[in-house]
Image (tube, rainbow, N blue to C red; front, side, top):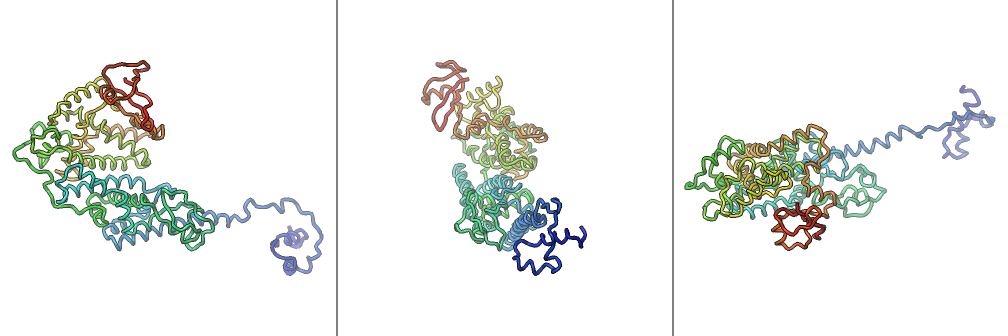
Length: 517
């Protein structure tokens, strides 16, 4: 359109803002176009753009994301500086890591981000468990305690309430990333929130001030569970990046664990009771070590609590240690090998590796039961019954193994840890479960989404029914002795007796069905 044409002048008048008054418009219009005649314009000349102003629209979408990411970045930087000033050992570790790695350990699930602290918290829980185990075992005031008391103290030391108090005392709760990029939850710093926050995620965080102010948006406090999870995530991060020794120093610095004690001889040496050479040879081959410096540990690891005549304590303390060692070994292996799997699937894999059925099968097939020193008259029959179950092909999940077998397996792993330290203890744990690791390695190299085959059938039913249905297996004589009501079904027909196993299905402790194989 020519600038001198009538159409151009008409379009110029039409482009004036509608908010301007008539008098204002007249002041902007030249005298020579006041009386411009009506001009019929083509329709496409006044066609509106799909976006009134694409540039403003683009800034409206991108700018909040940039501000949100910038705020998260600056929060992590402030956290690193806070640790460097108050906790030098932890601060030095965090300074060597990328901001993204540290941000992962501070990001709660309520942020709805792709990466949260879930995996690190899951690993850190096992690390903390072993840290507490080592500190209690070598501390002069607790090294002599029974396994039951040690378990109770360890549970208290790793409880969420205690970890929450540690996190708040250290000031870590002020740097936890809680809010997702949502206009109902997050507002840029310095802007007043016009929309009252929605307190939907009460399990993730809570707020004290119900007013929709900027201070309210920024002062949201994390829940006790989130504070405890962040402590475990930081422990897991330090462990995976710097190792166990550095992790011990960090845990002691922030007050999570006790300082390593000076009790070197954790288990007494019994000079008058020497281990059987066959036991030494078998144990070293079973856990994959060349030799043990303190072979008397093997005597304790294979002594049943029914041996009251022996001055040797039972395997329970070493089993308590081996449980923590095996838990960390399995989780670290899965953490490194299955980098993309969520925690929910990692828990299923871990359960498969460390459950009693798996350890009992590995231990029994290699002959661990032949070296258990006991005075329990019922154990030989249990061993024979378990062997028969394996021979007839009942499967891993359909057997009822004697619990003493997996306990002794864990005690042997614990003996290596006590004798030779973390590195050899982890190697021993991985050596014991090597057959299972080979099978899992094959599954993890492929597309692995279905975990049904790895779940225990009872656990599978439990998850399918939302946790309201439970299954337990009894021997038939035990089932009848406990006084369960009849009838007892045997593949659809009533059974009045016999020898076998009975599956009992309950819903909220109400008996639904009882069936015998």
